[in-house]
Length: 115
Image: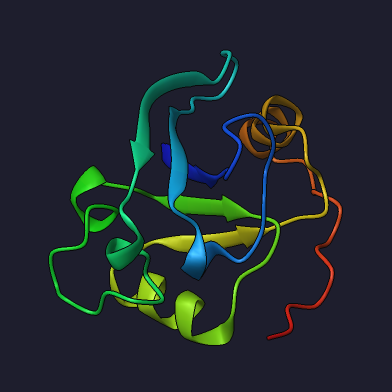
């Protein structure tokens, strides 16, 4: 499984996935440690909030999911059209969240997303 984590600071899970410019890409497999495979830093004009083309860099990463602290309805719809699940959580620790996902454990629910 490949998961992009929205992380504006490259340390914690951050929100507003559509406006996020920084993502950590992880490979995740059951019974193994999450492995960071890439850091993606987008220019402002390539945030999903600003860019609406079919060739967005996130779409090219063969992702199964995006993990974020918050995401708007349109972001979720766009990701779903690409076959990418959006997982929102109040958990800010990346490794803890990824381990929970790999183990099939629930994550603490995210706060409602507001604009």
